[in-house]
Image 1 (cartoon, one colour):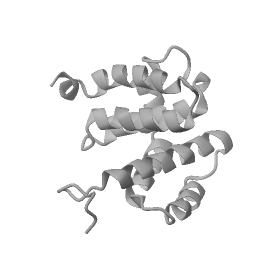
Image 2 (cartoon, one colour):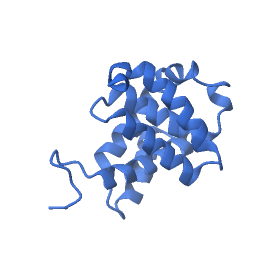
Image 3 (tube, one colour):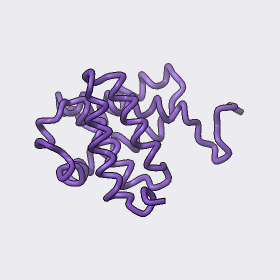
Length: 150
């Protein structure tokens, strides 16, 4: 058994890799509007070459694509511009994080925010992670208010 796994069976490193792949897939979708099936097939093939949580990757991609209007509406009040004006990498990170905050209560909000920041630092603009952090701090206070107040 993999020693990185938590007692609940989740491998945090594999989850992080899944989020990075999901970020790349959502970014690609925002640019070329590929079908959900094609996106998952393309990026799942790439994931097969590294240890990642394929099931979680698929949930993130399917969830964002199927609920994009809900994600954008949840984020809109916390943005200083329209969703479409946000840098594409930052927009993808924000959409994934919004999906996790709304639909994945099993993932602590701090993990959601930290993962979005890390992904944005890796793939986004120089100060993009600061913007993502600010937006998600505000969004988490609304979407996960009870958890944030603890």
